[in-house]
Length: 400
Image (cartoon, rainbow, N blue to C red; front, side, top):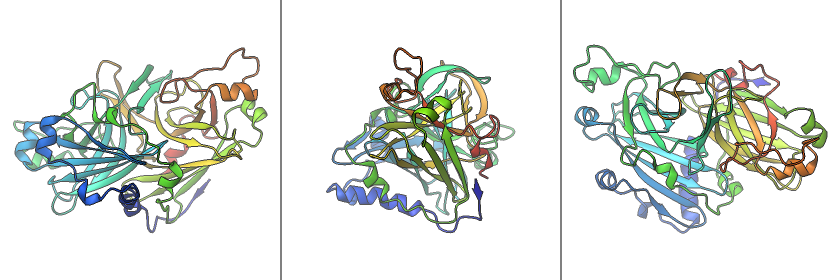
């Protein structure tokens, strides 16, 4: 484990250039692929897609109700998602919000109250005109889901989260703007790292509850290495830590299996580079942020995917909230209800359940063990985890 000084120069601009560069490589003119006007998209509730080597999907984000429309009449957002063959890169732009304010971005099950299962995906700070953006990277498509096979907080089956919501981080800001008519004090919600946020500012309520915009996004043929080659992770390493084989059976069948992760911060969001070595070659693995490092794993969400090379090595770069502020919450909904719960661990699963079975990683098993930890909810066993850390103090808790 290694902790060093504050980051010097991170990659926010590099991620923006990534989207532009891939669009150009696919023969698309970025200026000619502008998102439809907010009003038109709001009326249609549609996501527009462009196909090619790298598929992009674009959709509008709208003011979260009449009160926001009145106090911030021009508030709106636009989202562009670039998909490669394993992961997705999302650029989330906002316009005409309250200036010089922090906003928190969540992936949610429902666009409005009670929101359902939701996790903290990123943060934006607006400029003097109320405009801003954030770039995040992970699984942000039709495979996006959370699961909790067990644990003290909640137990629920794989559940998709296809909506996005953006909250005022400071509850005083919308109250002072008059966005809460009739309220005698600021409304406080759990949607920031301290669980003391303001009200919802923007959401994807222009899409049906059961068919949010992320459900429209599919993988493309763009190779993940080509996408990640556009990303330059620069600056001081803020925190690094090892990933180890998940138990003696994996140690025996893959004696050199290991991983490491490095997390960088720009003060609002984190970028994580996750490397693996000595795994089964030419195999897909799925990365999850988890509440516990071992069974029953607790509340977990699908964060990214890796495909190993001929030596069993590989990596993925993801971007979001990977720190002591990482958490999920479900204020209500048909699936489950739970208070804010931190997820401080990481786990990497074999995506194909046959792979570890054929390698002899499941001694005594007569058939491959199947777990819910991939997009089809038919993955193999856990390969690597952060089990060298205590259950209640996983590595993400060390990132401030």
